[in-house]
Amino acid sequence: MNDNVSVFSYKDYVTFLDDLLSSKRKSDLTYSQITFANELGISPPRLSQILKGKEGISVKRAKEITPSLDLSEKESEYFYHLVTSRTSRSPKQREESLRYIEENQRQYVPASLPMSKIGLIDLEGWDVIWNLFEINADFSDLKKISFITKLSVSEIEAVLTKMEEIGLIEINDGTVKRLSTRIKFGNSLPSESIRNYHQRKLQDAIKALDTQDKSTRKNETLTFTMKKSDFEKLSLKIENFIDNFLNDTEETDHDEISTITIAMHSRLEEAKKLH
Image (tube, rainbow, N blue to C red; front, top):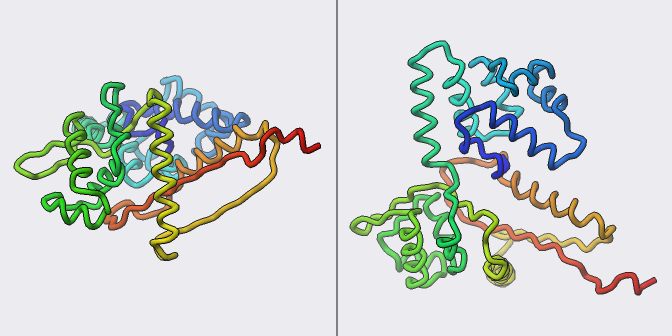
């Protein structure tokens, strides 16, 4: 699911479907509401009425269309509750679904960091530390964390301090608890911070060539010709690839952290001079 249309950000399934359709149209200019309706198995006129709020989706129908929405198991469950909170005939079910939505929004909606708090990205290893929570790492022994992650204890402490400062985690008596499961930096990151982050990730990838075997790393390289005007199209394909990269993988019981870094760049200076 595209982060820009995360189902966990919504309390209304109609708004979610409308925004999802808009996102698909931006990615593919030939995509239409009729195409969307056909994918969902809903007649185009009925989908039009649903998006206008004049008709609803039944609880049964909600379960039938989730596979077409390309949602994970957890996202599908959340979408189901979005529908039942509005259309269930049972007041008790509607109340339970509203409670479910509220509880899961707190956990899964990306924590957007304002300008005053985005310094996290400048810290070495912040992304590794953040993902350690996903594999239920024990933070009681920072020396052990340091040995496994190849980060210094001081680097780990700096990251944890910053995360606590900006409200991503809380630390009580040495116990570290994550308060959100996702981070969203937004579009206000300084370009220097972005460049430095990508440089660190590329350096990590180079180091892995010498320190890891093919059981833990994968390298592919392609040099190709293209029309310069296709750069934006290829950039969008890379973004879509990253958005969908983890589809069809296990969602629970994770026990490893990996990084994928994609770098596309020109190999020519003033190519027209070649002709």
